[in-house]
Length: 235
Image (cartoon, rainbow, N blue to C red):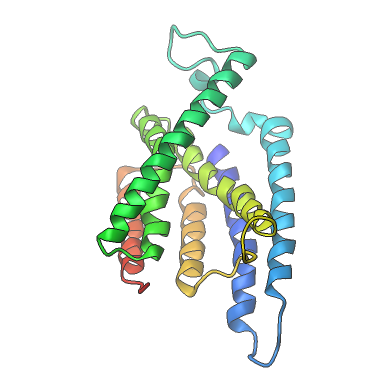
């Protein structure tokens, strides 16, 4: 249930993200559209949806995100559950160190990839995304190895949903104060295609609430196909 709810949220959010690109590529040349205003309006709406998603997941429908009974009871047998202050303190400390180490690792890998001739598009979409989320990926893999597939899929989808609902609009807002040029949500044709395919596959894969190793293999293959495509994007 957790993965299905997050998949629906990700699919609907993806629709909002690609709207500015559709206006950019489909409008007639003689018609002028203020794409910055469209992106800003959508960023505001995405941030509002993010706030309501927190209310949904933490208050009104928190039972959907509890996970399996053994997870809600404190994890492995013999381990007591942490109380709220301890859990929050550990979360804050772990988040700080993971973000710090990820920034160092991403900076090193990014420079190395550029020296190897990889394009900035490939580095940003594939290399930085994989390395920057290494902690979440490893947690999802560990959960899957323990046959907690709902938790594993929820971690993966939750990361993407947070980027779409929080990080993306936040960057749009910050660009008005910190960047020399305002950021918009006009993605390229290839990026729009990747967003649509990814969100559709997530919704389709989590629809029946079942999984197997061959489905995982197919999803990895789709990701590698996209990586090959972005690798050959010039510039």
